[in-house]
Length: 432
Image (cartoon, rainbow, N blue to C red; front, side, top):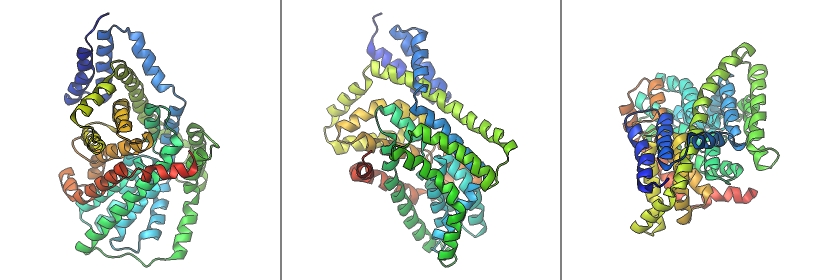
C-alpha cells in the first residue's frame, strides 16, 4: 500500500498530542494513535499485537514487577520508620534538623522503594506531621518532601532505569545503577545546603547533639532493610545475578524480614499488599506494551533521523543541542507520566544525544532526572499532588516555596549534562 510518510507521522505524533490535550488516559492515547497510524500504513491488527506483546516479554523487563513488589512489601512492613530514625541519627544535629532528616530519609528510603511517589507518601506521612507540629511552615514542609523524593528516580533500584535500559537497547542496567549514585548525592547535598539557608532565615532550631552510640544502634536496627540494597546493586554489578534475578531474590527477602524481623506485616495482609502492587504493575506493563508498538512505528517512519536532521539544520553546537533536549524533556515531563515519556522519547532523542557526544549511560540519567523534575511540576505533577495532600497545603503554595529546591535540581541536571564523568566514572571503575 502506498502512503504519505508525513501524514503517517501526523497521525502518530499529532494524534498522540491531541488525545493527551483532550485528557484521554495516556495508555489509550498511545494505543489509539499507534493503531490508526499502522492501519493507515497498511499493517494489519496482528502487527500491533505482536509489537505490544514483544515489548512486555523482555527478560530484563521482568525486573520491574519484582522491584515494585519489593518496595510495596518493605513499605507495608514498617521499614520506613526505622530508616527515618537512622536518618535522624545521621543528620538530626544540624540546623533545621527535621528538614535535614526529611532529605536524608529520602536518600535512604529511595534505595528501598525506587519510587518518588512511594517515597513522599511513606517518608512524608511520618516526617511532615512532625515538621508542622514543630513549627515549620506547611508550604516549606511539602516542598522539601517532594523535592527530596525525586532522588528515588536516579538511585537504584529505580524501575525507571530498567525501563530506559530496555527502551535504549543494549544499555547495561548495572552501569545505569552505578551512574545514578553521584547525581543522587549531589542532589542530596544541594538540597541540604538550601534547607540550611532556609532554616537560618526561618530561625528553625537545631536537633539533639550528635551521638555515635545512637547512630550505631539505629544502623543495627535498619541493617536488614539496608541489606536489600546490597542484594540488588552488588549482585548485579558483581555479575552474580541479572537485574531480574536479584529483584526476585529481593522480593523473597523483603517478605521474610517484613513478617519475621520487623513484624510490621502479617501473612494474612500479604495478599492485600500484592494486590496494590499488581494494580500499579498492570498500568505500567500495558504502557510498556503499547509504547513498544509506538516505538516500532517511529522507527519505521524514521522519525529520529528526521528530527536529528531538523535540529542539525538549526545548530550543530553540541551544547545547544543538549540544552534543547533538556528543555524538551522538562516540558514533556510536566505534562506526561514518567514511564511512557521514557518509552516514547528514548528512540527519538537518544540518537541526537549520542550525536552530540553524550554517552547512552549519561543520557539515561539525564532523561530520568528530567522526568523526575516533571513529577513535581504542574500540571501533571503526581508527586506534587501527593505532597500537597499529605501536607494539607495547596499545590500553588508548594510550587512557590519549592523555587529554591527547583534551582538545586536544575543545577544538578546541568552538571551531569555537561560533566559526563559524574555519571560515567563509577561504571568505568567497576567495569560494568
